[in-house]
Image (cartoon, rainbow over the protein chains, first blue to last red):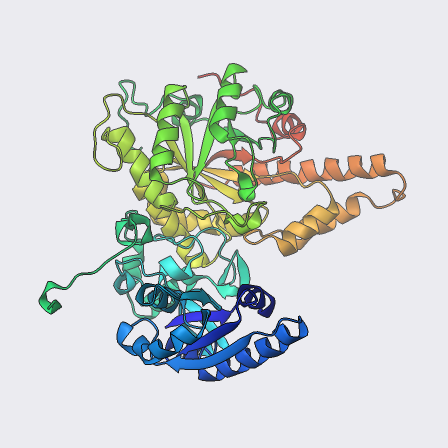
Length: 222
Length: 327
């Protein structure tokens, strides 16, 4: 899932203070699950902003709504009628939702209330960790299901590096060394010989490095 | 030994290569470039190393701190009559820049190259920089070997004049997982490494165990291993290395010896304390050199006297490394 967190209140307040009436718009998918931008968070943030802008002496009016998924036009249509009533939208969706709203409704400025961080999973209550870099050419089949691109700080394909100590990455004592994890998994699976293979350097064209990506499925087009 | 493509059997014909192939116990040194455009300090440090070691490593933005580039300092050393070993990390440059820099290095006369992954930028003074790592050290070795042996760049395009480098890589016998380290060395050799320099060794028995496993894998016929050594400056430094530096194994006896070195010298007598520490630090370094020399497969030492280049002539003298062979 996409993992994001709310921008600091001060930063959000600065963004919305230019307007008189703002729609705080949540999203019911990823950001609901990571408790950053769902219906509940919309309610809490709207209240905080009402109070904060009032204290600043320039009260801003806030409307609240949440759509199923802000990255799809058909779901955003649900709030179309609210837009002429407001000066701007404060989106609590990930960066994709923010951009979709701006594309779909160009007459209304939609601002980002969150910092979209990574593709990851909840590892325990209240903790989310990065797992995928969307490199476009998945190598999980050769690394025991552990991603070296996302989870190794150096994205090594022939790890571990010399900084791996006690199963921990040299960058952060709280980060496990991805290649230690791969070594352990491959050993347990009896596939250590795969780690002896020389992996050539990656073709990064399928990743962000090749430019903004697009997938076209001709078989699905109308 | 590794396939050579020169008419005299040499890959690059460098001094280091000739010393090793002739069967001498090699000695390399290290120089850390300045964090400024200060050229003088290089000339100051270099004087301690000239004639004392066979060639000198020049680090590449070591620990991700911005320093004068390895290749530029290599040119300065060559002008001073010292053979350089340039270091190239994967952290800061993509394959285009790396190949470009290496073509220039070769054209300028550089013959020895170490291919390294590099410390992560969080260690340095620019943790906010974009992180490159287009490849790792093994990918780099494969790429450079193909440049030298097949005369092609990574895309496959041919070069009319290919570079010729004596290729080196690093090995950390004390990093984890310990069991995998000899296999990782095997990968580096398979990828094209002609010589290896290890991280600093203090735990000689553990290093001997590592070398035994390396030998069992049949690698010693294909690669020259130079053991990394370094003189300790103070007992504080010893304790720091023993406890805070990942990948370093410093036995208690050496920490204790450094502590004992200043016994009886009052705290105020700073000069005397420093001298006592330094003498013991150098003695320990010399002992390690003598001990690793006895381990089968160790072809030389890589002396890293970081910010203490003045110690290297003394270490080399006491360890019986002088005079250096002329090949």
